[in-house]
Every structure is written in C-alpha cells, then in structure tokens.
Amino acid sequence: MNELPDLSKPSWFLLASLIVFAVVVGRYFLISGIFYLAFYVWQKDKWMPRKVNQRAYPKGQFRKEIIRSSITSILFGVSGALLLWMWQKGYAKIYEDVHAYPLWWLPLSLMIALVLQETYYYWLHRWMHVPKIYRIVHEWHHDSHISSPWTAFSFHPLEGLIQAVFLPLILLFLPMNVWVLVGMLMIMSFSSVINHLDIEIYPSWFARVPFVRTLIGATHHSLHHKQFKYNYGLYFTWWDKWLKTESPVYDKIFEEKSSSKLPPLN
Image (tube, rainbow, N blue to C red; front, side, top):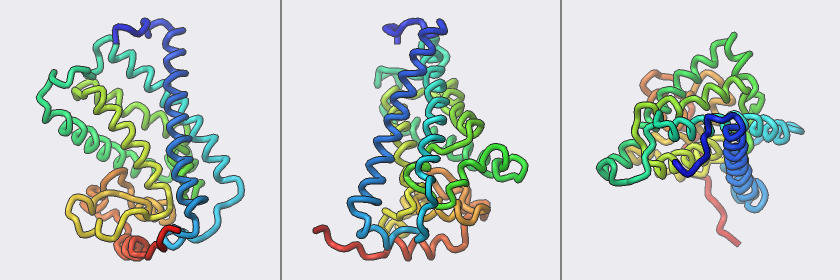
C-alpha cells in the first residue's frame, strides 16, 4: 500500500474512486453480461423450463436496471477508495502476508465476514420493507417485478450507500487478507447475479445436502420479488428459516424448477 500516492489528497482520492468505479462497473457488465448471454440468448430454449417467472420482461426494464446499477457502481467506487485510504492509513485490518495470521484464519475470516453480512443484510432488508422506508429506499429495486442478471446492482442511491458502508465498517475490526477480500467481492458479485437470474441453475440434489441446501439461488430471491413479504436473505436461508420468513411455497417451486430436465447440448 505504501506505493500508492497519498489518498488523503482530494485529487488522488477522486482518481482512486474513478479507478475503483471502472473496476466495479466493468465487473458488473462482465458477469451480468455473461450470464445474460449464456441463459437468455445462447441457451435460451434449454433453460426456459427453469425460469421462475414465465412472463415477458416489460419494455425498457434492462436499460433502467443498467442505468441504476451504474449509479450504484459510483457509490461502490467511492466506498472502495475509502477502504484503500483506510488501509493506507492503518485503519483497516487488511494484510498482505498470508503468514501474518494462521492459515486457518483465511477461510474462517471469509466465513465470519459472510455471516456478518448475511445478518446485516437480512435485518436491513426487513427494515427497508417498512412501508414508509420502502417507498423512499427500496422501491427502485422492486421496480424489477421479474428480476434479471441486470438487476444485480439496481438500487436506489440510499440503498446503495447503506450497502457500500458494510465492508469498510467490518474491516475496522476484522483482520482479512487482501486476496480473501478479493474473493469475497467476487462471491458478492456472482451471488447477486445468480440470485437475480430468475432461472434456477442449482440442481435438485442441493436440497438434500445439509449446508448446501441453505444457499440462496434464483428461486428463493425471485419469490421475494414476487411475494414481497418473504425471503429476505442474501447468501443463506438461515435467518428466513429461523424467523419463519421463508416463502411457504419455496421448497415446492425449487423442486419443480431444479428438477426440470435439461435437453442435451447440441
């Protein structure tokens, strides 16, 4: 980190924000674009039986989602620059040497961060569904009644800001290797796209494996966009199951969609 210019200077902080923004928005277009092409263009007929909502997308939805996701990416860019500044000044507990902590801390720190984010997001998500808050903060996201790969970052700026502060906050006290942090950012991106895909890509046997069955996929989150009052989780179904906020039809629809036979590749 010492090789970077002093990010306390506004000009360098602005440049860092622009660079991180370019990385974030580029990652968004790359991952969302690949999933869109793979499941909605190149192999559309193959995967349509697994689509949770069979209705057509409203005209202009993808364009709206891309614009809103790009705005969110600006906020994530500033958040990323803030995190770099915190690391540079010694406030963030990010470390480069994998031997600075025991090797077992690498996966454990990732799991702790994911559990903390799951908890943060679950309660944040429920709060955003309070009617007065919903209309101000969360309605933008639910404009996508049928989610798509492009919905991944389609948030109101206030919601984007609330989400953007999570990593800088936990890294004030949670030591994390820089490459574990990169891995977590990739998990966040892929998970968001998969959850909003509206096509169930997970196989039916996922429901029979103890830990794997708790992973949230397209069926789980698509039902949230459809039913509103269920399925608030981010990565895992734990909180929804514990607090009885999981959709009562989730298991049935997941089994139906994940069991749909896929035709052989031509």
